[in-house]
Amino acid sequence: MIFWFRFFASWPLWALHALGQVTGWLAWLLSPTYRQRFLDNAATAGLKFSQVMGAVGQAGSMSTELPRLWLGKPVPVTWAGNSLQVLAQAYQTGQGVLLLTPHLGCFEVTAQAISDAFSTVHGPLTVLYRPSRKASLAEVMESSRGRPGLDTAPTTLSGVRQLIKALRAGRAVGLLPDQVPPLGMGQWAPFFGKPAYTMTLAARLVSQTGARVVLVWGERLPWGRGYRMHVRLMDASLSAEIDDAVLQINQAMEALVLSCPQQYLWGYARYKQPRQDEH
Image 1: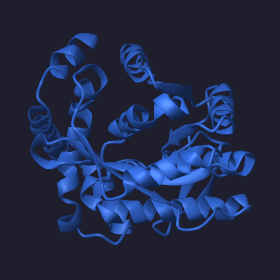
Image 2: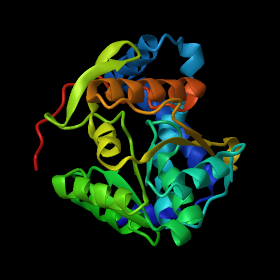
Image 3: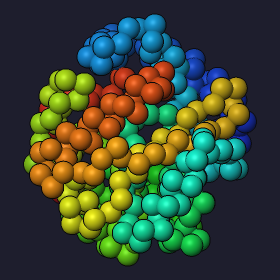
Image 4: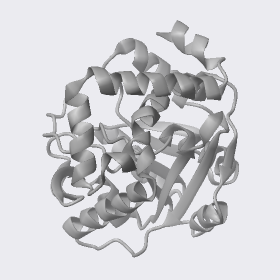
């Protein structure tokens, strides 16, 4: 596994994205289950295939760009509008920053860009991740994601404690709130009007620490030109009631997805039954 990652890490970004377009469409054509889930999820969001067709190839690019992002040279990153200033102001409150992004665009580069821009002054960014069940891939993930200015926290009780500690120290943590959590770590809440098992962790972190909630995602630019960071604050403060706060977060994720449906991971099994926690 590490051999192939190192091999593709030296490829130019445009070539990796082109390869990803091909693999994305092959997966679409060869897997009826994946194709149907993709179409069903898009339809649940009220979108036609013509509005999300670009996401087929983008899903492939999300995979093929990983070697470059994890092991290769830095990639070009720009900030949309006043995104950099919005994030800087959130840090300056000293309350900690909770960064939320759905499975939209390139969330790997999001963490790297924020770490590069702010870790020197505000400390490392801590991101929540689920360790891979494949030992070879887990080794690559741990060695590449753990870098200066970027810490990782596993989806365990100790990992949650790590997140709380970072927020209370005024640092930032990042997670994907549309990721289906293990059984007992979430609750059913509407996502595009359909019940989806949704993590309560983000809402509980805010309740316990008073962290500022910031929505962020990394747009994948065409022709391998790099990525553009989009940052904005939540439209309203999270409710003190966990049920209401979870719904608010889902609604915020819906708005981000609809801002660029061509880069959302529509094939993700968002409405699946939660698995039993192994820890």
